[in-house]
Image 1 (spheres, helix red, strand yellow):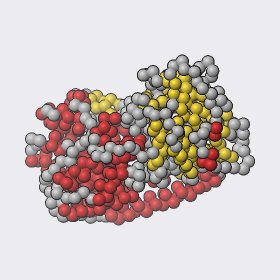
Image 2 (spheres, one colour):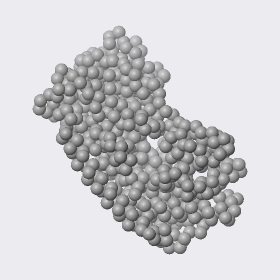
Image 3 (cartoon, one colour):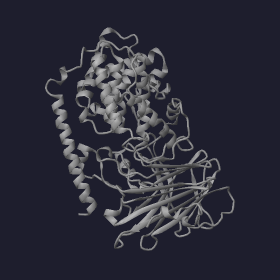
Length: 584
């Protein structure tokens, strides 16, 4: 058994014991009389409806009325049956159906037919609540459903009779009670914070719930303090979580004000920290980079969120707590993952993409990572190191994923090993910016450290890169490596007469990739979307053996078509490069 596997197994056993303890505490908290526990009088009416600031498409309302439910790349025609009775084509589709986020599209239609349809579908779910699948009561889905019902309550309740109003409110109470009494059953991280947000939103939206508001606010503050990092990132290191949290926290802040209560300081601080991260992660085309579970970016949603940003200043370059670096100069943006594996309980969606980077220029992304998918097979493949624009050894991942199916069903597909010790140095000068980082993800399995240096000139026209594979001790027997650069599917790649690779965007902007040490190869790749499925793309691959080529220099040069390329040397020869950053 390798040292990495031993360490991973030890951490996994400790985590499993922690999960078991949490579930025991949760079972005690629920207790036989939990269903009678409610802090104060039962609510009798809704008094406010927090705003839903997610973008909506009124044309989807017509599809839903026709019995066509299109979620997560799957389309189901119910043929007149209840959507809650038809077999779900995928877990992702079932998740979206039972979370009720699609109600906003009915509200956007703003007509009597949409209102009647919304009320009928909610009533249909309530009548089947006792028979709903177990997935419908997962903490994250319950919280999303509670938030959807509250924010869309004007749509659902308009012209509703008293009997439906009472059934609707009683169902909300049951679901909120579940979120309160089973809080520790929820997975760590975002699901627990979302549950806290949903309970707080409900408490503020109904009457006579002073104690519940106080309790919910306390829980919310605790979770925000635990999960939002000093630089505004989320502890899971997934950029998508920032978007989701701000979309729910901004209306929650307004709900406190509407009820005449001061928003809790932790809420205000969290929002102020997260807002700059929206600018930090934005590519030139408005999309977020594919790091650690980030999938398709809904740029219209980002635009909505940034409208709430009063500061509108330049984004930070060095998000050290979140583990990311940004270089933005001369119209060129480079985003780099320089962070460790998240804590075990927060790594269900984490990727083994340490030291991968993405490049955008003008209005086009050129270098990307493969992304993520809600399809189980592709999702796990997308988490591997070869699916990222970085170095992999023997096609292995720099992180170790849990592969025991029994444990995966209980605690998720967590990462039980990976980069833990990272060193990052940054040097910003008038003529160039340089980032040098090193990780130990391959130390346990191959006895190798990976170090990557990226230099971007001040005009943004040239990127110099160096990848070093540093062997500690005897060279490994299996030492084949591959340096991959996955291309955005809109980028056309072709070989030049000199052996370089020419990258051309739809608008005509061109970059040339060159490596004087290893001839670059063009291979097929895939660009994954958690909404629209997968698209065929290409990748540039530099392959070699560590004992032969332990250091590889490469470059990307922005150039007009037909422009003669100037010679390139290694990154160490650049006047902007500081040799002391490299270390031994």
